[in-house]
Length: 248
Image 1: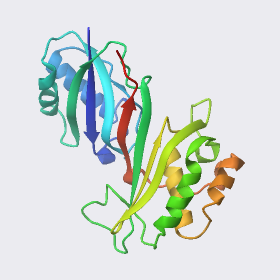
Image 2: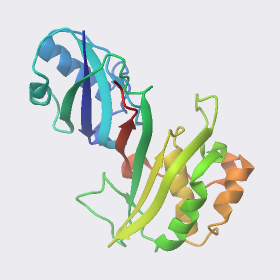
Image 3: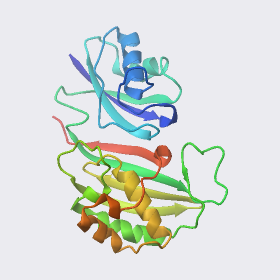
């Protein structure tokens, strides 16, 4: 049995998230269908994590197992010929049998993109969150540094989260501006349901001077969702990169 790892990019706006669901368009189901068409084998496609409806990916990782001896370098071309243009298989690689897209994941990087212009954008309206009020990205970046380290992120956890523990480690957090775009980027060992979107909403409160950077520490300490900001829409959220342990 061969274990195949995929690097996947997708525009999430037309999909009801990653997870396979009956009678709903989803990314997992579309790729599994394409794999079956190409190989003749039904597979269980395992992702590094599930993205929600409307969330995008530049570097989602998933793996599946097949018997068919199709050359691995031809897999992206074969699958892309069967997929919607909003899903692209960027790379395929044969990996050791014990590689698991979810369980051997070491770090993930998410990015939230805010269009901070007055009028917004027509072309990228489904790929950026439009916020017309002026943002102080330097204050936002100062606030984001309080997220770095191991913390209980209960205040940034949406209801309905299945995770038993809300303790996570953030390795890097930064907020930058490039013209009218303000970008929030977080790298961590894992993220709770809606955690990045809640953090982004809270940092917007900092950027509009509703709260001070030090208040991020107070919100973390409170372990109370009501203390944090609103959950921003999925439109601006991207899974950028997934990093793995070395598997020999």
